Length: 109
Image (cartoon, rainbow, N blue to C red; front, side, top):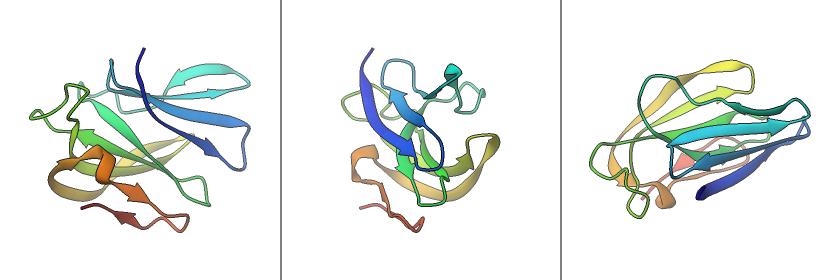
């Protein structure tokens, strides 16, 4: 399995990572591993977390979901036990160019 990004949740003893192979986001905690990205047939990449343990993920566009050139067309926000909602629609851009700050500001470019 190829791993894209890794992040942690400050208030939980938990680790997040995305699989480049499957396009899914996983959470590993004391209970084991669980798939937390939406179950909608789309592929996703982890962007990161903020100081309040909100999780930011990118929806991958069909144009570039092949690992080496992962392109994002939207940013979604959620939490460990909450669904993800659309935060921002994007013109397709490289996942690696998207960052989230500790206060939850998402920047890309």
